[in-house]
Amino acid sequence: MMSTKQVTVRVTGNQFYFHYTDTNEEPIEVISAGTMRREKDSCVVEYEEAYEGIEEKTKNTVTIGPGRVQIDKTGVVTSSLIFELGKKSSSYYSTPFGMMEMGVTTTSLKTDIRENEADVYIAYALIMNGSYVADCTVDIAVRETEAEE
Image (cartoon, rainbow, N blue to C red; front, side, top):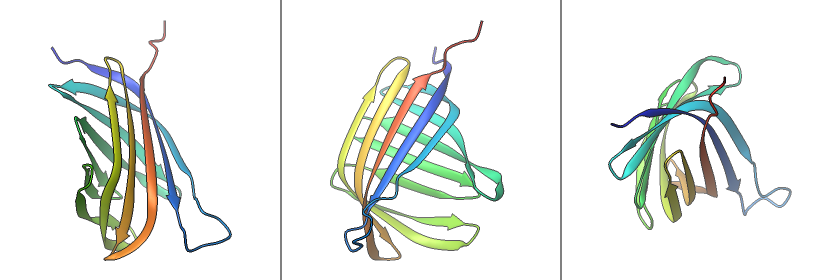
């Protein structure tokens, strides 16, 4: 039986802009309650993300498998990206401010799925509307939430 576990999801992302001299990174961190369930040789993590000044939340579904991570967003922001080492993936990224084409080329991918937790590290080149924007990294740490007595 595949049970769903209550988890805390911590997503830390960095973008490195080599053409700016004043700052090279803009770290972003999201910590959210969510769920994790195992499916054969992968796991599926779901959590909601809020955006400042916007009431509606975005549902994130992260499917972690051997050599592959897929991140789907639905809600205020909509997109679907697949990360596989050395491969390119693109999707339309829809926001309240408009739609753009977003592409990634994965340069590093590490996944570690355990019984009650998972870790993901992805490094990728970000392309928006056909133009290179930045080199990025994202760390996803998923930990089972301790049950309250």
